[in-house]
Image 1 (tube, rainbow, N blue to C red):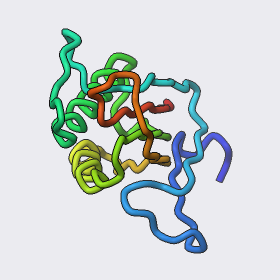
Image 2 (cartoon, rainbow, N blue to C red):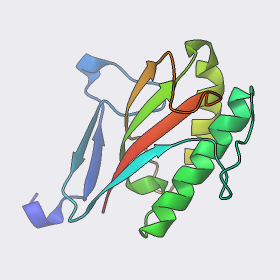
Image 3 (tube, rainbow, N blue to C red):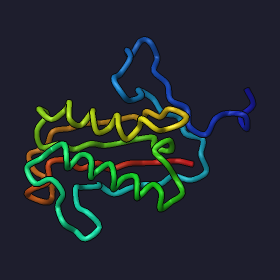
Image 4 (tube, rainbow, N blue to C red):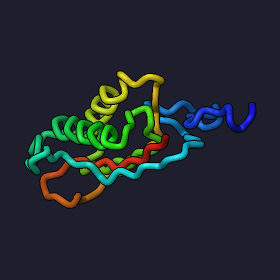
Length: 138
């Protein structure tokens, strides 16, 4: 394949690394633009917290905000190549995955960025339960 024929974003999961649930082990980018999106929290457009003490509601708002940020630069979730997810309690992993799967469900072609997920003791707002930063490419 000639270099100009390669897809701008290629997601790989070598069998030696195993099949990850909902993300890619490797994402190769040949795009001409890289977009860095600051950590998104569960604040709405007016700065009000959505889902105090409700992880699922906060995760939905975070992905909603991520969608807004992507659209602002002419992208969709299909352009995401890396997510870094910070959660206050790893017990919320299932709720995070549900929100993530809904966010990516309508993406064509299917997208599964590389993901790092870590539990942290605090986020910058005392009531925040999740924060996601992202990198997209075109």
